[in-house]
Image (cartoon, rainbow, N blue to C red; front, side, top):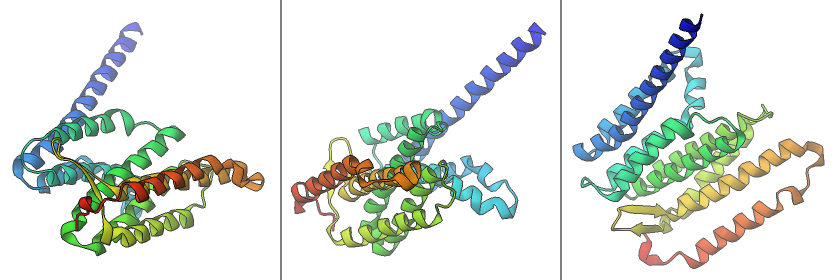
Length: 261
């Protein structure tokens, strides 16, 4: 019996080590092949191959499986696209993306607590909207609006699907529509905060929508928690903080020198 337990523990340790190694390989490899090839195709292919389990289901479960993994897909695709748009020469941002994506796959993604789920959602919003905004300079507003809707929908669904509220379809669609509308309105005045030495570029839109996503999902969770006893005071602090922070960003940090159009 003792030998069986020892053997089982050894197999579990070995399995965990292999799992960590493969995720580390993906985290580094997705960025590495993107930079070395000078294009996003190989990196995106690597990301989607790693998600083969999403598609290894019966047809009637495929769409549900895709929706359940949208946040993870958004993060992976965004890491590859951000690596591509940062250039074909290795910069600090490429190594930061390697480290981040590895940490995402090994530590952040497996977490399932309420706070971790919200953090995963906000990370997807920030990275997804960063990639979509930078890409929109060459592909136009239509794709930006579509991607913004998808990111807002996926982020909201990721949070609410873990809650006790099972009637969240309308809420997720509204969040997606708000993302699309804000992105459309901001397209003509997209501001980028560049850190040229490191190759880092942070779009103002991604910051604004990340703040909005936090407040929106916090408010929805509060409504679920308090139900009939819900009062505005329950969300007063995050709403005021979010509105004030967005106001400061828009009014004080919108110098036209950063406009990408």
